[in-house]
Length: 151
Image (cartoon, rainbow, N blue to C red):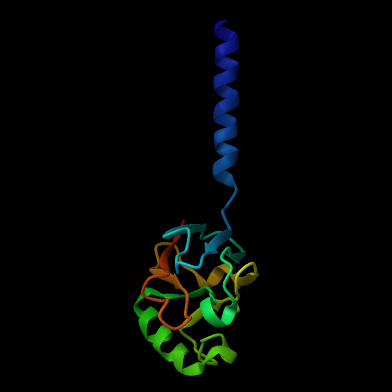
């Protein structure tokens, strides 16, 4: 019985080591008709070659009434990027063209639609202060979260 317990313990330790070795390089968010993301915090690994952000709009309203996107910026830039995005308009997905403060953004989607964006992992630094938000007018104050980049 002791040998069996010891082997089981070693197997569990090995599995735990494997689980930590695989970096998390994907963020999957859901947005709804109540202007909410399903996560207030998402985590990725700094060792990712690329980071993928997926958005699923799980509501029913069309993009013109309740469109959502995901915009990723350094936290100090988030409010200004959101304000400038409103001026850019819906045709530009409420993102100012060429805005260097925007690290990545998805297109606007309506109910039942999805969008995905990939960015180089090198754009994010471990311990950096990053915010994701929806830039549709009036959404950014509520629909936002923190992206944590772990070493």
